[in-house]
Length: 243
Image 1 (cartoon, rainbow, N blue to C red):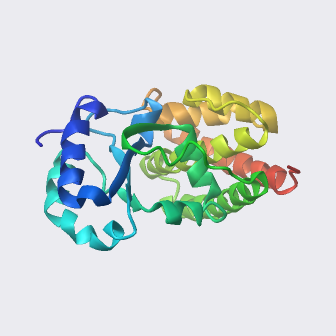
Image 2: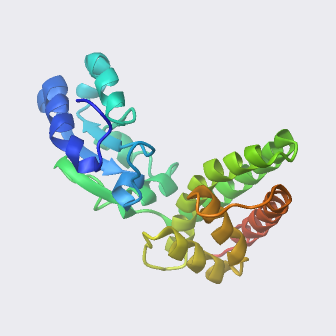
């Protein structure tokens, strides 16, 4: 393995080979998730994220992978999430939003598809969406103060935080009975329509994240204040939402 790949698929054969070498018959499956699976991979900037499903015996032998970590990092492969089938089935009640996003946007790389038949409880998805929104709101407020209104820090906070909101938005679309939307802009548009939010705020945030727009310092400050208000309003609506 050498430099970062232009496309995630370039690393599949090598990663499969490594995992087979390390875990042998304890390897159940390898699944691509995240931006690479959603079609938003950016060479040199995006990580390549894998779920690696192991047997109960294999999960106790993660140290076998120590000598592969440096090679994987050079190819922009993030440290994989190592799971077992039992862990997945027993975690659907506490991490329904994460598994929903895995299920909506993934690509099988090797082995058994452990995601396709997962059943998620809408009430638990709603609860986690509410918890995530309220938690992110507190974090955004704290971050806002810590930036002291400096535009560069505010832009960094926007880029970092919006990724989490895109995952929450998938959960909200699921609760509204909408089909999953891979395009981020269209996903934002649909959520804003369903929850009566200011689309212009989130559309501008996305343009900042994707480095498609430049705003004056005072405009970024005002945008962030509007961002806080929209997240607060959304949290209130999700709190009172019936599913």
